[in-house]
Length: 172
Image 1 (tube, one colour):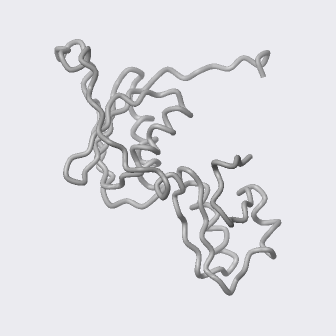
Image 2 (cartoon, rainbow, N blue to C red):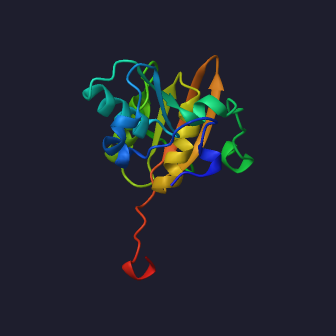
């Protein structure tokens, strides 16, 4: 479901699950720009269209295109004075520089799958959108965005793995 905030002016919104049924509505003689918030659905839609003969198809990560570049935020004073024994160390470092969407967020997920609950992953990226994507991904998965900052065009993001959330059938 899209909301007004999720749409681009003049865009025709076709959910990924409905794309194949609407191929006849998508022009083949003009450029087609696909978009979604994180980029994965746009990438999948791009692959579907290319598989059906579309040649001039581009994938735009919506949040990256409209949101301002995030400003670095300070580490809370309770964390900045912590000793190494109080703050979990980084269990895994991942460099996703120069990867195109959805590559960085897929690498983040793979890294998080490799570590134990309570451990941290440090991600280095050159894509300003990854900090927003990582925050959205953490909100969706229950993991924690511990820190993010930018220095000379490189973004460092530290995530902490949380225990999976169990949803009872009685609450659905």
